[in-house]
Length: 451
Image 1 (cartoon, helix red, strand yellow):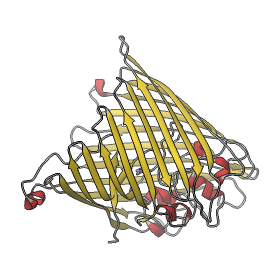
Image 2 (cartoon, rainbow, N blue to C red):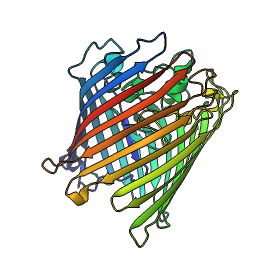
Image 3 (cartoon, rainbow, N blue to C red):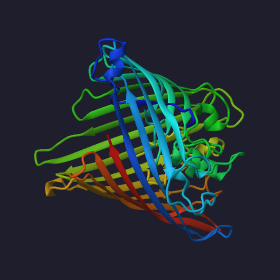
Image 4 (spheres, helix red, strand yellow):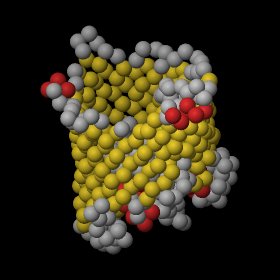
């Protein structure tokens, strides 16, 4: 077992355990065990027409694992928690063959792994909560990105307060990042190359981090290969007006960049049961300090969405634009190296909306089948990314990348807390150049059992 730690911040709900202990011994006798068992199977049929590629191949993987967590009761507002995370590959092919075994379900070198992912202290006094140590963190520009077997985890120290009515204030300092298994999809290079641009605009490192899974690494060391002292975060979330939610986040990544994230969402219900909703989001990034990897950071991302709910049917449309600057890091693309992926226009896999100059569009629809007596939700989507020549992924080449897919979620009544999920994405020209392109059909089956 390797040591590792995580921090669990859900910005909308930072709460301490409801149970209270009379003394220190009672903290442990009143503790609780929880967790999740996960089975994940993935199969990607790749069509690679580049002359240097292996052309058509199918990459697969199956894994079981999840996490087991223990939380003490609270004594005078103080409590502790710890969680172990694990992934174990089953029925795999040649683990050393990148075209045979999908790396996103496994740890470094496609190995099995188990490590301490969470280990924190939490203290609550009135409307103020402090949580420090390794935990799971979900914020717009730094998050768990739990898209495969194991999520991203953090070492952080978070203070939140709700004294102001309908307002949550958050101050945090995040010191370390432990990449989850999804980050292994991005083969960034050192020195920086086109795959590095794909990685750092998709939520992961600018340098090669495929063997970083489960390792708590300085935030700057993970992002650009240099220790920078972590990332300081301040946020305010307001929901005092019915149907309206406003949030503003600032991330000060010492010697790398300052990122501001702002979002407004508004929805309302009409007399006939129709419920429209709207959202806008903005990300602004500028460089601060100095380092030996990137200098100028200059990026702006804007996104908007509109949707409507009619009974159990939900239809939405989203669009976004990212700025470009040939003299800036990633040619002016939005840098997001710590799992943050809040964009309305992201696909299930394709995250090109943060690349320089990209105009993106997404349409999605879902239906909840509860009126038919089924705990079933089905959804479909289509995304399109109009890539500028400065995108940085394909050198001086513009094209349109597309992705469509579906998502089926079933919670069988016969087994409480079990979720079965079938997902698919069809990427058309995920990568394209004058010499060829990369496309695929991918299917995923996930079973989550929470306890």
